[in-house]
Each structure stands twice: as C-alpha cells, then as structure tokens.
Length: 321
Image (cartoon, rainbow, N blue to C red; front, side, top):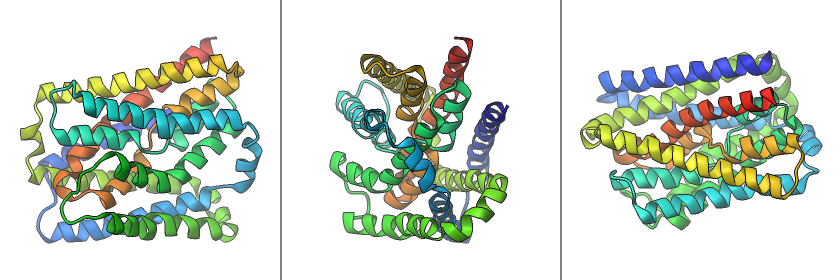
C-alpha cells in the first residue's frame, strides 16, 4: 500500500513538473523578480541539502552496508558506466540536437542516483530495502563530491566567467556545508523531520519545481523553443530511452553473472539505473550560467519522467512473478 501511494506521488510530481514548465514558458520571470528568484532558489537549495543530511540515518546505512559486492556494482554503474555512455554519445553525435543538449546528456550521466524513488520502487518490487537505503544514500552523498569532479574531467569547456575554484566554492557553501550540518544536527532535528515527513517531502518537491521554473524562465529569454523543434525533442526522448535501456540491460546481466538473489537483483536494477533530479537541478544552478542552463537540464528532466514510467512497469513484472 505504501509503495502504491509513493507511485501516485511520483505521478503527481510529473504532472506538476509539466505545468511548471508550461507556466515558465507562458510567464517567465523578468526584471527584478529574476534577482529575487535567484536568491530564493539559493536559499531553498541549501535548505534542501540540510534536510537530506538530517535524513541520513547511520543505523540504516550500517544495516545495509554488509554486501560490498552489491554496492560496488551500483556505484560503478552510477559513476562509471553512465559517464562512459554519456561520453560515447557526445563523441558519436548520432542525434540532430544542439551542442548544449549533448552537454546535458553528459551532465545527466555523471549525477548520483535517486534516493526516495529508488527505495520506494525496490520496496514495491520486493527487493532488499535495507541495501537500497544504504546504496542510494551513499550515492547521493558521494555525488556531491564526484559529480562536479567528473563534470570538470569530461567537459573541457568554460561557460561565462565560471571557473573550477568558483564552482567548488559554490558546491561547498550551498550543498556540502548544509548537508554536513544537517547530519551533525540530526540528533536534534531527526525527530521533528520524521514527525513531519509529509511536509518535508512536499518542500523537497516544490524546491525542485522552483529550480525548474527558474531554469526554464532563463531559457525562454534565450529562445530555447526556437532552437528546439519537434524533431529535436523527439531525439532527446529517444536518447534518454536508449540510455536507460542499455543501463538496465547491463545491470541485469551483471546481477545474473554474479548470481545475486532476486532481492539484490532488484536493488541493482533500481539503484543502478536512476538519476537524481533532486540533486541535478540544484547542482546545475550552481555550475552553469542561466543562458544555457535550461537547455542543459532538458535531458535530465525528460530522463526523470521516463525512468519513473519504465521502473513502474518493471515493478509490475516482478510482482507478477
């Protein structure tokens, strides 16, 4: 029952995301409101990562951390397999899309896995929930360090006046510091957060929508829809579906080769194939200038919707078995 409610919440978030993009397209932020929106977004991002740190339970991590082989598979899928595929896609250039979209695919591929949805889908399919909690939480934490590092490693491009030192400083101040503070203060904040879990989840989702509105508003000012026609959007959707299919297939084969039991196989599929919108949007707000941010984020936003739909189908397959 909890799993079904989680799935309904994900579908609701997808609808809200669509309407946020539509709202930003019709009524983009302008003038002084842009300055206020950027300030509000920065505060929201810091609060979001503070809550992520407060939610990180050391007991649950220890409970699910014993199977090192399982977690190594997931981390290699998230931070090695995905980036390699992103680089191959950028090198091959099979799709007729702007260069910024290829950068967006590479950015998508270096992000950590989701936490909430990966755990919920694992639970619905009858997988090892403790291991999923450990793996997804570790991926989210490591992503704060690894994602900017991988981005600088694989993309030899400078945007605007941004530089590596400035990017690292932004990540430290807006993401890492709030995350660590939240975890250190967990002794005093975890009770309130667990008691008001629904409110925290809603704040999490609406902070994502705020970043989406900000990014699309800036993209509208740079005529994003004039640069992207129907064929380009179809190419992005095709690229996302192909990327997800390849990763799911490789993860399934690896799980079978390692002879993991069915519960751990489910963890590998759901934790090793998902990418975090909650981490990706705030990080992009810090790493990329507004002139190209909306274009870069399109693959991530589309991939997010596709992964939820595909994973819900996989859940039903495991349930039927």
